[in-house]
Image (tube, rainbow, N blue to C red):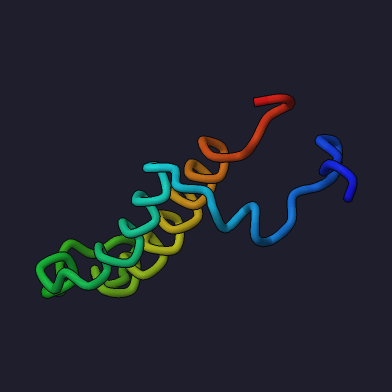
Length: 80
């Protein structure tokens, strides 16, 4: 049986073994929208929209930003 090629792309099983602590940041965009105190109210309004509606868009931005940060911190670079 031949030794695995170090230049070969990562398989799904090798990527699943990533135990980086940065992955815990992915809980932030899941937990933050579940806190009722953030959206329990009408004011402040932003461009005439109540807080609930513009916070939904802010949660999307939070999720994208968090996912991007975790990806950048955990991706494998070169021979690392």
